[in-house]
Length: 119
Image 1 (cartoon, rainbow, N blue to C red):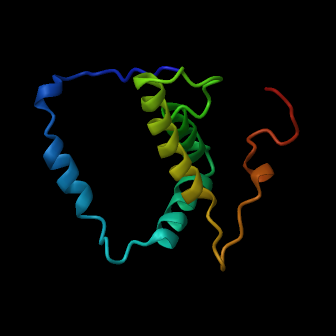
Image 2 (spheres, rainbow, N blue to C red):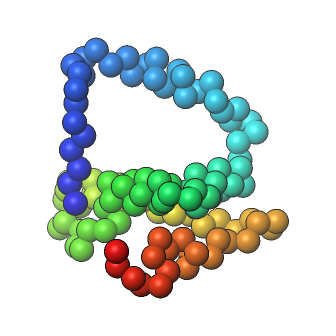
Image 3 (cartoon, rainbow, N blue to C red):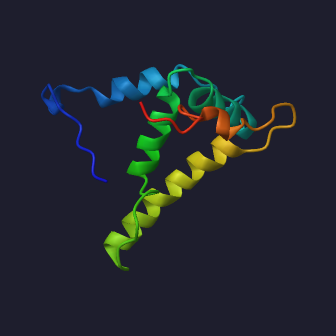
């Protein structure tokens, strides 16, 4: 699945460094360990009522080639595919990491249509 983002402005006008600097203000790398990452990913992807977190997770995993039927053959394309896939594996590991005081969400409860009815 290929995604193209609509650009409504000149890409050259985007200040990438300012964007990254803004993100860095929200994290203390000394306090942000794997357990904290797992908690935040679960909160982001599982704890919403309208499915937004799950749609974002699906989009990220799509970009990471998790829904491709077959990887490309070896070579540069295969290496690029594997790099993207490994990022998706890290996202999945963070979402599904075991936490002592927090059980995994019931994935059936995340189904927007648990009865199987189509509207």
